[in-house]
Length: 280
Ligand code: SAM
Image 1: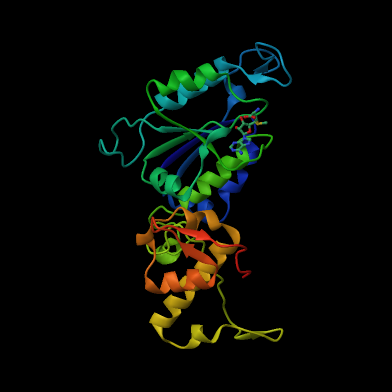
Image 2 (image 1 turned 180 degrees about the horizontal axis):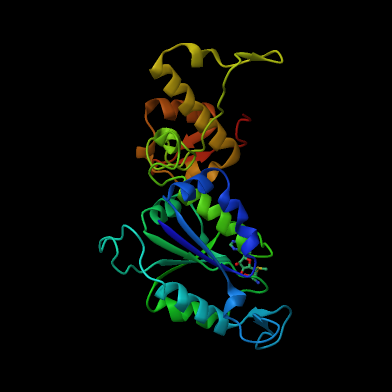
C-alpha cells in the first residue's frame, strides 16, 4: 500500500518510522511518502494561508499550493497492487481530515485497508479553501473524515491515528493475524461490542487474581465469559451500540445477560435500558 501525506509539518509524521508502521515501512509493505506543502509555494515567505473571504477569525489555506502539491503527487505514478495490475496507473483515495467530516470508524479503516493508495491532506488554520476538495472530488474518491467530536490544531495527529488503524489491518503487519479479530468494533462475532478486559501472567498480582474461568481450559465457557464481559463493558461505556443492534445480534445467553444488565427487549426486538445501567 502506498500512502502520501502533504503537510506543512513533515516532522510531525516522524512517529510513522516507529513500531508497527515503521517496521511495515522497513519491510516494504508500506510505501509512505511525506511531502512538505511549502515546496509548492513560490514567494519568499513560503506562504500557505490567507485571510478568509467574508471575514471572520483565523486564516484559510490557499488553494494554489494544495493544487500544485496534489497534482504532483497524483502524477508521481502508480501504486503497487492496484486492481489494474502492478505498475498500472491507479487513482488514490483522497482522505481529508476535518472535524466536519464523517466519523472515522473501524468499518472505514477496514475499507481503506483494501485500497492500494491513500493520499492524506492534513490542514492547519481554519482548513483548506473549499475549491480544492471540490476540484479533486470530480476525479477522485474523496473522504472527508473526522476522528472525533473535538477540534485539534491540525490534521497531522488525525493522520497518525488513521494510518495506524489502517496499517494494522494489512496482511503481515500484526505479528498475529488473529489479533484484530476480536477487537472492539471488529466485524464478526463481537460486532458492535467493546472488547472486555484482558489478563496475562502472573496469575496473582498485588493480591489480585485473574478470573478463574480463564485457566479452566474450557473454550466454550471462556468464550461465553468474554462475551458477557463485552456486553457489560458496552452497557457501561457505549450503551448506544447495543441499542442500535437488531435482535439477530444476540443469542439466548446474550439476552439473559442483557436482562441482568438492565436491558429490556421492545416489541420491535431491539433492546432499551430500563433505568440506570448496572455498573461494571
Ligand atoms: N474551523 C475548523 C472547523 O471547525 O471545522 C477547524 C479547523 S482545525 C483548527 C485545523 C485542521 O485540523 C482541520 O482542517 C483538520 O485538518 C484538523 N482537525 C482538527 N480537528 C479534527 C478532527 N476532529 N478530525 C479530523 N481532523 C481534524
